[in-house]
Length: 378
View (cartoon, rainbow, N blue to C red):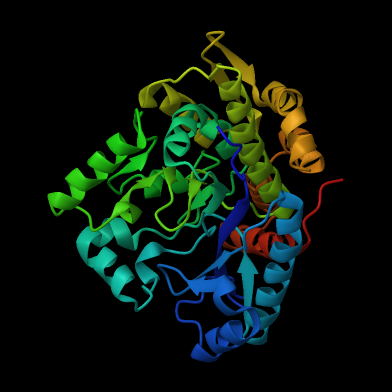
């Protein structure tokens, strides 16, 4: 089988906050969106909430190429939002904004979603990051999806940025999934034997009038309906772009690695969704501070060791895809923590210095504003 392109495209969702109150801007001024359209064009779009902005990178052969574009988009959007009294934060939940006060974007698709799912939809004050990797052959797309599902918890653990909900530390590092999984057709998808079987699954739901098309399958990974890609959707949006690029590189390299195994008549063992969900929960709860189950060994392995395994196992693919630096950065994330750890540290430090809970939460927003644009590990 011919090697797939393994191109990469990255989608990120951001929140717009008021610089004075640090709360979400419930209804950004139309002029702000007019400027966004003039400056970045179709690379930035509306999302479910009016306080959200989604950006979509171009198609790139290398994650390092996507870095330049995403840096520019964050910088340009931040400049425009600032002119209108706002600020951009790349975090999967806001530290204290309340879902009931948010306004839905007046778009037929989003209004229909709000009408269908009621409070479940209204609570979706969450942001994520999606990574598309180009795999032209549909049956190969399904085969690699079945195998790479096992690694989704690992990518979630490296991306956590949602430790707060409604002004309270949740005790989880990725609370976003708790909210998102209230929707139907979420989580780890089942195994499909072929593209034809997947299409029959979709057609059954469409034929019964349950969904209009496959875009309503909100799994943690899915074949894209718009592009010949496999779309990874489990990760939080990374506050630091460097972390986002690492998650994208791991995903891209992992698919390349699985394809190399296939060429050698080998494959990764396929596990049931329920087994993988055990690690998803551990990633939500503990992130890089914890451990995930290596089901081949039947034991828990610390994330720091798993990051080293990624770097070793995927080294050949990282060379071929020019993603060595991004892959090695997984070691730094495992050592220093994610956005969720930094947010909690700011909050706890502010409280220890005598700040009120409200003041401490605003300090977290301030930290996110800076980290989203300038965050860098040393």
